[in-house]
Length: 99
Image 1 (cartoon, one colour):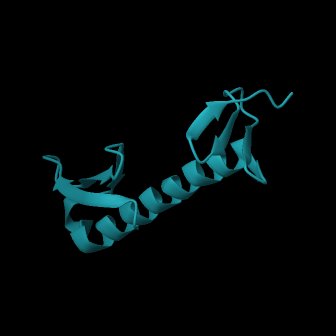
Image 2 (image 1 turned 45 degrees about the horizontal axis):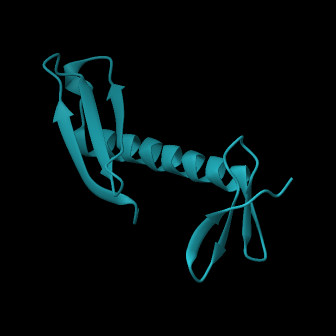
């Protein structure tokens, strides 16, 4: 949850759908929605928790993807997803060929 700056929930005009928009620290937006079968079944607190859980799962999916794309060895980061390869030193980031 440290990645989350704000969450905004909105009940849609149909009276049975809730949309939760989450803004992350990098300004990336994640939108989740959930609909119930009838307006009488609408429980905003429960639906917000469902959408929040979905959002957190999506954040974890993104983090796992990044973790799988990069392996860290000593002071080098080797990207395995077709990204440029870099080495880090005291002067900053410099391009490097690890092939």
